Amino acid sequence: MSDTSIRSGRPSVRRLPLVAPLRLARPSDMWFKPATSVVVATAVPDLALLAADRLDLVMYTMAGSLCALYGHNLPYARRARAVAGVVFAMAVGLAVSLVTASLTGSTPVLIAVGALLAAAQKTLCDATRIGPPGPVIFTFVTSAALFAPQRLGQVPGHLALTLAAGAVSWLVAVGPAAVRREGPERRAAARALDAAAVYVARPGHRTRHAAAAAVHAAWQTLLAAGRPTPARRALERLVVHAEAALARSAADFAPYDPALLRDWARQTRARGPVPTPPPATGTADELFGIDAERAARRAGGRREARRALLRSLGPGSPLLPIGARALLGCALAGYVSQAAGVGRPYWAIVTAASLYQANVSLSWNRALQRTLGNLLGVLVFAAVLPFSRLSPLALIGCCLFFGFAAEALITRNYWLGSVAVTPMALLVLEFAGTHPAGELIGDRVLDTVIGAAVGLLAAMLVTNRRAAGRLEAALAATDRARAHAVHTLAAPQTTPADLDAARRGLTGSLVELREADDTATGEWWQRALPQEQVLAAEQAGHRTLAATATRRGLIAPAQENGAV
Image (cartoon, rainbow, N blue to C red):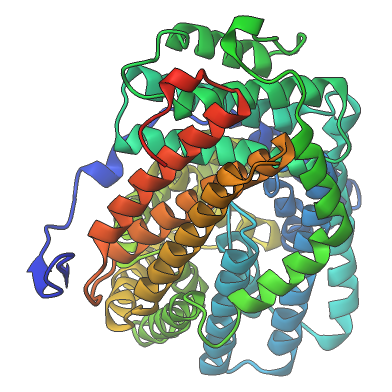
């Protein structure tokens, strides 16, 4: 692959990785949350349909059940709104597909509508930052519905089933709040402590960025959680402690034992009381700044969020080229699959849609992972198909098992999760009636290869030069955030709230800068990138963060990391 050389702007040759994208990672600290949620949200409507002897309607309830996969990183107050929005968006997309399917049987038209939906879903999911599993679930449901036999009079009833299952998903998503109200906040704080422990143990550019991102995510979660409780207050102090460890120089980590930070993280995840750092750690006794910021968010947070969403979808948005890739890739994949003889080429559309990540390098990784996972998955499907046909309960049990396995494994690596997703997707077709196994497997293999190859080709053809513009904007925003922090430091009447707000603003801008830089450098073709300026901005930004921590009293004045 060739991309733009960072220093000269001239194309340079880059080897495509083959092994690294397939390596297994450690499982997520919350893999069981979406896994158990989707099982419960799917089992309830499936068993109800079994009792009514209408398992042929499972596809419509599953559209609502899969909404239970979203929002698990969000505090419950925000999760309730996010999952409701996901259910609404799922119903709208499904309505478009069902109405289209009832009005036309033209495969080229259905492919075009599927590609348009996939592009819109990708753009909206990226703009709202809904998080995993992203747009692929929406595209899977709407693309499959396009090729399902449908009459216009059936559409309201089928949508009602989706909304009913979506209501079950909403209850499953927010139900744990009655048992452990601060669960998401505790996990976010624990991740910040773990990341700080890694940075203290192995100080470096990457570990510092990972720690800064985890601390920033923890603050965002705590700010979005609602009114403070005693437990949230204790979590805020722990995040301040992680932030103070991040602000210290590599030569002065003595008060921050990585083992102690990890132990606090373990206790924070557990069900017991939130640990309290000893006074000698230097964390502030009271957190004035977060209260002021929380109040400001309550006053105008939703209005500002809507404005940010509109800006992210505007004409100059860096998300639009990714949406264009999805539109072109999904359309081409569907038409090539149709030309190859696949009667319902929705899986080629889904495969292509699943590839589009932040840049071409990551899209290549996903293409490799998706292809391997799907090809192994059809073998698993062939092995379990005889058992699934023993009875309707056996079929439901297999789908629930693979739904759980997909979420349990996908955090290790996407290809491993795809090994479970593929048989589950194929087994769903069995609810409407049995199909020849050879035809199902042959079409799925062909669609996978076509979708991955054509989708990746589209990613290379549609350049995203706006990624460099996003990087330049992030660099300017970081400079402004640092200038504001320096001004705050220099002000004689600076309050702790001012320092805390300036520090969190600068941390957020540094996280965005690193993400923008990583995205731009992974593109197929890009103009020269100001990487030296990015590195200088990051170094200066972290020095300023250390200075704000020193002024705030989080670390001793003698330990300030250089000049502001």
